[in-house]
Image 1 (cartoon, helix red, strand yellow):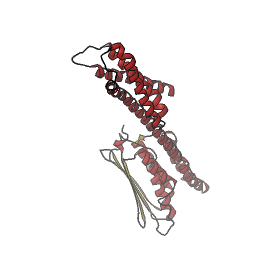
Image 2 (image 1 turned 90 degrees about the horizontal axis):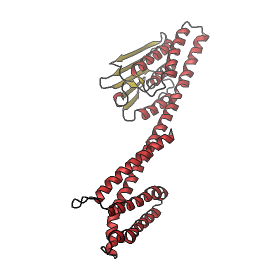
Image 3 (image 1 turned 90 degrees about the vertical axis):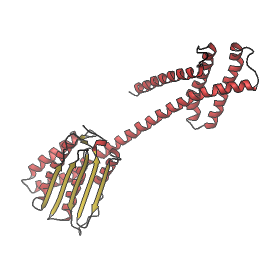
Image 4 (image 1 turned 180 degrees about the horizontal axis):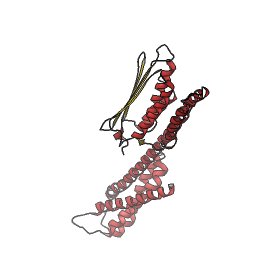
Length: 342
């Protein structure tokens, strides 16, 4: 695969160089008073092209790209000198015998003629290489980001399993009649996490449906100790979103609300989408102010989702987390239309 890509790039560069040399040759040889192309023009240009190729494919990689600038410029001017000597001692006597001066003005005329052509050919080669390097940097950056995203996503399943298996174990020990329902909800959520979240984006409607399943799974643990609300508004179909982002905030809401109080639990979740594709996610939960809530804004899950948001939606999201004496509120806003839309 890499060899095919490299061959393709070489073919593109060859075509680019052929077109460039043709255009520069036309510019070099064009004379509206003498529209025909003379033999000396072809010979001179081929000499310049060979010198430019020597600079492009030997001197640039050997000296310039290794930051050996002094050696590069010395070699560059030596190459120009060699071209001038070849032109003055070989081509001039053949094509213009006795017509051009062999003194300094003749050499200066040759330099003025040679330098622009070679500079253009070398400059475009340098620009081509710079664009190629930039493409490589972009590909590497994308690879690193994708690897980091996969790593962050892989942390979610163990984190989720650890919390819910403990709860399931507690219900099983008590022979609770809710155990089958918990297993069913847990199976549905896990199936979605393991098999349907492999892509970078998933349908928003499916993600919201799993959020509701996840909420119902955790609501079983509250029983009659509080109130849980889950609402959606707007048309959620037609858009896609990075999976397993909002679920972290819901998980934190249940965890911290239950850990700090045994009754009057309140959790309110709302997901809305505007016609322009702006997602607004709200998650509110109360907690007891005298309990230990030092880790309310910390933890692996929250740091994980912040990194994922920065990687996937770098300039298209806003996350506001506010904490009062007894209320913890999360507001996440994402411009879905700037990233992925079905």
